[in-house]
Image (cartoon, rainbow, N blue to C red; front, side):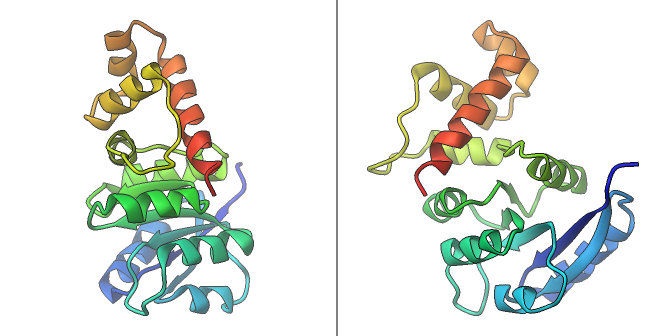
Amino acid sequence: MDPVIRVAAIDDHPLILQGFRGWISKEPRFVYGGGFRTVAECLVSGPQPDVVVLDVHLDDGSLPVANVRALTQAGAVVVIVSADEEDTTVLGAIEAGAAGYLRKSADLAALTQAVLQAVEGGQPISPELAFIMSRDRRAGRPELTDRERDVLEYFGSGLTWERVAARLGMKHQTVKVHLRNIRAKYRRLS
C-alpha cells in the first residue's frame, strides 16, 4: 500500500475547513493534518503536513507569497486554491514555490489529483493555471517557445492533454513535457 499523505488546509472560512475534513475522511491515501485559519497556526500545530491546501486570500492580512514561502520552508508542498482569478496573485504564489493552483469551484477529484501530483513532484498545471499563464503579460515573465504558448492556450481553454496533442499533431506525453517545462520556467523566477 502507498504511504499515507498528511494533508492540511488553511482557509479563513470554517465551512470550507469542515468540508475539507469530510473530504479527507473519505480519501484512504490521505490523513487529516488539520484545518487552520492562518499559516502561523499551521506552523505551530505539531506534526507538519506533507501537503497544505492554501487559500491565497486570508483575513489575517498575510501575503500569499510570504505564506507559500513559509510553508515550503517548513517542508510542506503547497497547492493553492482561490475563489477568484487574480492573475498576479496566483502567479506570484506559483513563483514563490506553490506546486499547483485550483479554483475553489473545482471538484474533489481534481483536488485529489492535484495533491497526489504535487507530492509526486509532478508540479501540476491545472487548466485554470494554464489559462492564467497564457494571459501573463508581466515584464520579466518567463520566455516561452511558440509551441509552449500554443499548449498553454489550448490546455487553458479546457481541452484535455489528448485533445491538445491531437490539435497540435504531437503525442499527449509531449504535451505533459511542455507543461512541466513551462512550470519549471515559472518556478525559476523565485
